[in-house]
Structures are given as C-alpha cells and as structure tokens.
Amino acid sequence: MALKDITLGQYFPGHSPVHKLDPRTKLLAVVLYIVALFLANWFVTYAIMFLVLAGSIAISGVPVKSILRGMKPVVFIVVFTALLNLFYTGGDTVLVRFWIFTITLEGVFRAFFMVVRILMLISGTFLLTYTTSPILLTDGLESLLSPLKKLHAPIHELSMIMSIALRFIPTLIEETDKIMSAQRARGADFESGNLIQRAKALLPLLVPLFISAFRRAEELATAMECRCYHGGEGRTRLRQLKYRGADWFTLALFLAVTVAVGVLGRFGL
Image (cartoon, rainbow, N blue to C red; front, side, top):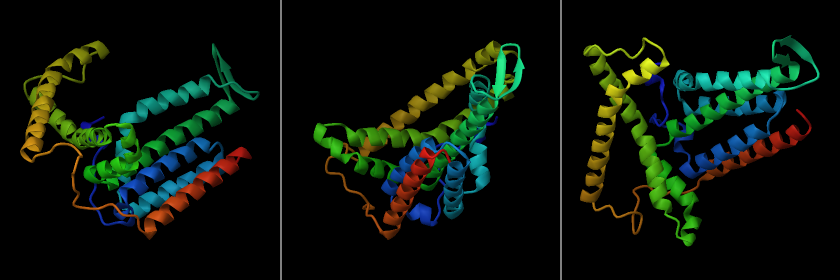
C-alpha cells in the first residue's frame, strides 16, 4: 500500500450541487446515512443505501477511483472483520465444518453485509471531506454544536482542532513519503524482514516526522497569533451559512430514506 492511497482529509474543489450544499446539511446527512446503514439488515435495504451512495457520488463529481483508492488502507480491517463474522456466527444451516471452524449460511450473509456496511460507511464519510473544505467543515460543526456553548463547552476550539487535524493529514502523508524516499536513497529498507524488523526500520522515519510535525504546529500557532486570532469570541466569517431550498430537500430526502430503511428493516427486508 502506497502512502498516496490514503486520501482521508483531502478536499476536491468543485461546483457540483453537493459542493454547494451547506456544510451543516452534509454533516446531518452523513449522520442520517450512518443511522440508516445500521438499520439496514437485508438485500432490499442495502440496495436502497447503495443507490443513495451511488447517486451522491455521481452528483458530486468526485472520481470513483479516488474513493476506491482510499479504501486500500482498510482492506486488512475489512478482511479480518469478514473472517470473524464468517467463522464465529452460529446458525442452523451448516455449509462447511473443519477443525474448530464452522461456516454457516447465516455466517456468510453476516460477513457479506458487514463488509458492505463498512465499505459504504467509509465511502460516505470520505465523500463529506472530499466535497467540503476544512474551513466550512469547522463552521458547520461549530454551528451545529453551538447550543452546547450555554454549558460553557469549548465548541469553537474543538471544531478548530478537528478541522486542523483533517487539514494536515494529507500534508503529513506527503511529508512521510518524502522522508521515506530520502531514507531509501541512503540505503534504508522498509519492506524486507519480519514484522519486528520492519517496525525497527521505521524508527529513522518517525523521528524526523515528529520533528516536522512539531515545527509545522509551531509555525501555524505563530501565524494565527500574527493574525490576532483569539478564539471564536467576536469572530466574523467571510461566508455566512444559510440554508437554501436544496439543503431542506436533501435533509428531507435523507430523513425519508432513514425512516424507510428502518421500517423495511423491521420487516426483515
């Protein structure tokens, strides 16, 4: 797996209807989408969720290969989860029995649906970061959590931390790739040997990476101080968030899908 395959936190600028949606709408839509995914339990409901995801990707204009490339880092987790559900799910219809393992028809279905759920969940969250800039994501998250300010919760600071973390994931990945290339040019080997040897080979990589991360953090803090940043108190925004007709329609659509999937799931569909 190449580091360039990790696309979490990247933003693809565009002018699609999904890009133009209010960030609060996209955050709430993702929450409803996740709830609906966990309510789905059979082919009909998963087909509905797949159509919703496919339609959202098509409207957003985000390349499908970018989403598929972002799946590569989680392949091991997906396969491991599938095997656990396959071998450790009981049922009445036994397909294969060997040694201490038993594969049932119920286990096959459970493993399949679990894999589909994880992949669709990751795709939906990727689509959020692909179509929403970190600044808008911060503003939307802060606006949605603003009622908690009455409880003196540091909403602006938490939103800013999450936004900066997402923003610098691609930067740190690029920095890691450069350091690995420099270390390889000096004879470092990151791919041969067993797991322990590979872990030891990463030590020359981690030290300069941590130094670079701390240096970037210090530069960012200095830049924010030079621009008289003092938190969210009295802060103005270049773009004021405002719901439009498309936002209300999107929320109504995702709410209807969630309710429909929940009702159909109760009937085992």
